[in-house]
Length: 181
Image (cartoon, rainbow, N blue to C red; front, side):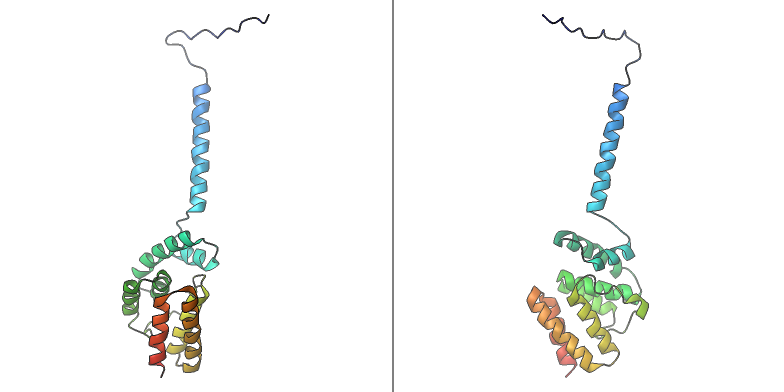
């Protein structure tokens, strides 16, 4: 028959406890750090330029893309530069928000825009969406006076807007067709 196991005696009052409690806290801290790191990877919160690059990469799922577009619009709309104002317009189109589009168009001085980003600031204007890239290209062509290219790009936007169900982009394309007549 096996011998009965004995529990260790309890420490006397005032005696030091074993290091088990400390190890538990270390373990819990490591778990919390791992969870925090995982959440930061899943739900990143980069600065303005980082958000533009993150969206332009095109790897976000729909929900996260929408969240980043919301953040981007809020940040870009509060900035003064031409590139930021274009980004605000394109983010508003992607969000399908007519009120935000009107605000962004007003900040640009109307359509076609009076403010234009320099060539170096145009690289990520597409924000990871081919339709937005065509909106930007169409607006740039209008600003540069290239009516043929602008018309071609706006027709592409109209088709893409129907394909993805974006009424705001379709309205912009229709308004541009009127301007270019």
